[in-house]
Image (cartoon, rainbow, N blue to C red; front, side, top):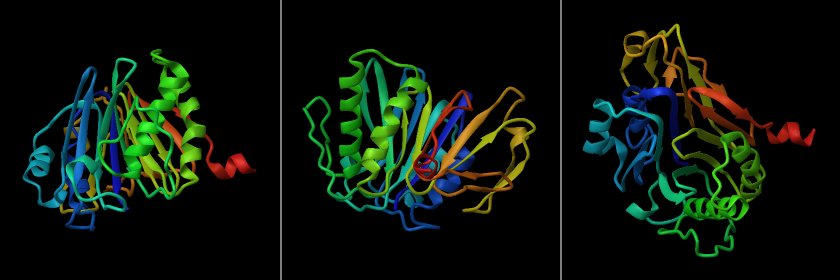
Length: 265
């Protein structure tokens, strides 16, 4: 499968340390070699970079991991293709415009027999199940809300049953942001943690690199991280329950749904 990473922060933050470990999984410590991408979403600014080469071999990925790009929402993806060729248009994150915002999406998993009816308002540029799912979700949001931009708790409550519906077709772990907050849904496997003072010393699981977080953060910082697999030693990563949806805003969890097991009980 592909792997996902996200950071949501109270203040603009750089994810250079975490991105170093994450990029290593794109061909050095894991075999996710079919492309990579990262989005930096800060207010109205949204920068998306994708390459159809392994992240571990990319000079651009090394540059981004070594030179701070600060944003309140950062979303990254390394690809192991299940549907669609190794081409730029099939690399995540994908982006679309709705309700005056830029929306960015990345998916880990594989959806079988998923061919939703699309009305042309949002159409895939590539051939992946991931982009089809994103376009269908954006279409549903536009049909449901029109041009009104809801707050994130209302948005998440509306999206949750649609995410469960798509997940009936296979693995559907995803990240979605419009720059105000970050939504994460786990159908099979995701982990998260919150970093807040007092900051400690941590080391990467995917490289010989460690950092004292107190030297790169200040007492007002608070951030939430999401990753397919834990990225660091020395931090309390928590697993999502299957079917769980969480929304992170300003470094805090502001919405959480119950997992599928709890809903079925």
